[in-house]
Amino acid sequence: MSIGKLDDLPRAILSHTPTPIDEMPNLSKGMGTANLYVKRDDCTGLGMGGNKARQLEFYVGEAVARESDSILITGAVQSNFVRMAAAAARKVGMECHIQLEERVPNPSTIYRHSGNVLLSKILGATLHTFPRGEDEEGADRQLEEIAETLRSSDRKPYVIHLGPGNPPLGALGYVVAAREIIEQINENGPEFDEITVASGSGATHAGLLFGLRALGSSVPVRGICVRRAKDLQHPRIVSRCQEIADLLGIENPVSERDIDISDDVLAPGYGKMNDAVLEAIRLTAHTEGIILDPVYTGRAMAGFLNRVRQAKDGQNLLFIHTGGQPAVFGYETDLEPLFSDHAKVQ
Image (cartoon, rainbow, N blue to C red; front, side, top):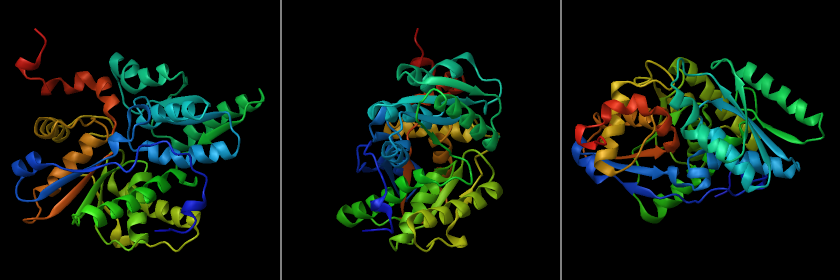
């Protein structure tokens, strides 16, 4: 199944795919009469796994084609993307520079040093800081300053820009994932009535939606806001889909009515806990033995469960597990309400 120029673009194979689609029978039984499934993109393998491995395949592919010697990327302190970028860089023999943005106010010492930060250090990444968390243009400018310093020392850095206005190469990883899902459905079923995914930078959400529509699938895709409200996220997904069409040299198959976004579980904001997220993390762990993180998958599952409560009998609903488990270790304090007395170390 070809989609425009998709198979002609540089790509570095970094992930273990296809990732499985598993049933969640215990969670299904406890939630009603819908049939619940999970796409295990936490099992991509690279640097402890996660969805960013798919996105990095196209960024790193271009970096290799340009004969770069280092990868530069920016993200939150507990960003899964930057941790996996460091792993990807090492896999292809490059250095990695990571810029950590202050997106979460008053974080704990654990948040600053454990989880993805610890793994990035183990991978030998050079860490930089950016004092603001909601200034994508400013973060990109400072990243370019770091790149210019490296160029002055005869280095050949490749900068991964994630903000609006930059070609969303990473979204192509989820165009590929859409093709993979359709192949899995054709081989083993079932047909899905809806797919739910976290919506942050917009690359995963837009890429998945674009790929499905480009391949003729009309299955609804619901994006759960994890960083910004839906009135800000909606135009971002619109733009991302058009940018993907431009990259692939085809007509945009996504219409306005295809874009379904919910911010019902976003408050109090990015990287901050609420009761619905805590319950989603607890329920998924206790029923299916699946670990979710507080920033992306826990919040996306909370939105998914809200949808499940409204589902019709027998509907098949798919949740995209985008990974992020290392971030759990940075959020130990926030997760303490989940610990029952018998689970505590005596």
